[in-house]
Image (cartoon, rainbow, N blue to C red):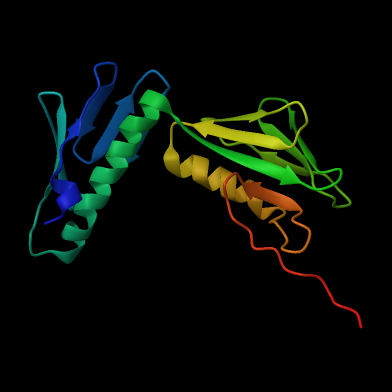
Length: 181
C-alpha cells in the first residue's frame, strides 16, 4: 500500500470540494479546478478530510494509482488556495516578449518573424517592463508547467553564448567556443 496514498488531505476552511464518483471539483479563492480519475481508487470526503483508498490490493494498476491520485488532489487543493507560478527569463540582444490582447503572447526571439502563442484558459501571464522576465500563473500545476515548457521550447538556451529562454534557477552548462591555432 502506498505511504503517500494513505495520508489524508486536510481541507482548508475557504475551499469547497465535491466528489461525484470519480470526478473531483475543488473551488477556492484563486479559482476552480476539476479532474476525473479512473475507478481503480476510491475517493471519499468525510469531516473536512479527503481519503483516497485502493479498491483492490492485488491489482497492480490500482496500487500504482493510489498515491498518484492523492498527490494530484493535494496539488489541486494547494492550487486553488495559493496558485502556482513559474518564472522565465529571456536572454539575448533584441529578445523580448509582450502581450497582444488578453489571450496572446508575442515573442520576439531573433527569428525573421514574431512568434504568437495562444494562452490557454485559466493561465495568466505577467511580463515586466523590460520584456525579458515572464511569469506564468494559474491554479492547475500541470497546465502552468506545460505552458512554461511550450514557451521555452521556442528558443531553448544555447550553451555557447547563453541566448534563449530559460526557467529561472535552471542550470545551463556553458561550452567553450572554437579554439584557433
